[in-house]
Amino acid sequence: MLWLARPPYLRWAAAALLVALAAWSELSPPPTTTLTFLATDVAAGTEIEESHILRRRVPTSDIATVEPNGVAALDLKAGDPLLATMITDVAVPPGWNVIQAPVPDGAGPGAVATGVILTDGSAPIEFPALVVSSSGSDPFGAATGRLAVSPEWTAAAAAAAAEARLVIGVRTGAG
Image 1: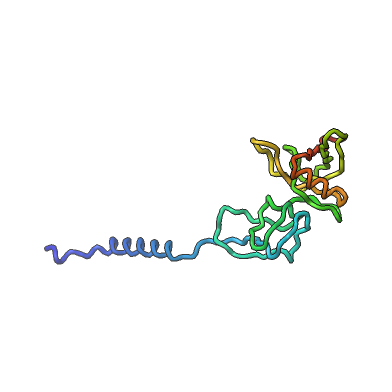
Image 2: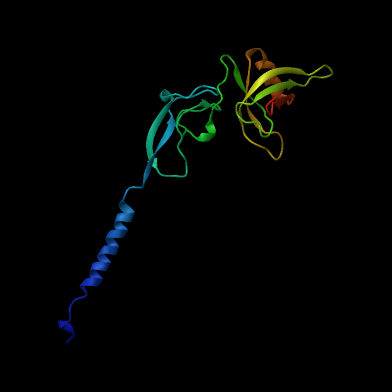
């Protein structure tokens, strides 16, 4: 007699468990992590301090958070997440300015450099500089980066960089 058979309680329990797991999966909050954001604009070469940052809980993503230890490698805008590529260990000497320049491939942050301004007919002009950051190699031309320059050379170096007359030499080795 079919109408006296036991109801399929185990199948009902399995179906209810499956529905509960699906609902939990859809309705549970996503995993979060703490990410460091910039609270204020930070100029290149400025030491990043606690007053410059905010920490917020955001959904977990592929962005790796970093601690704000170091110097801004480039001009940073408020609201941007703080990434490892935005920080360098190079301290720009007081009073020096940071310009964008063609930095040689392989020149790391902190490398002592010599800027050479190419002139028409007369001898090239040399000045001291310091590599703040480098964008790496560019297969279609020179790598670009940030260069710290003393105030007396800032205008000439920036103009030469804009006119593609600036060459940067970087000291290598122990000498």
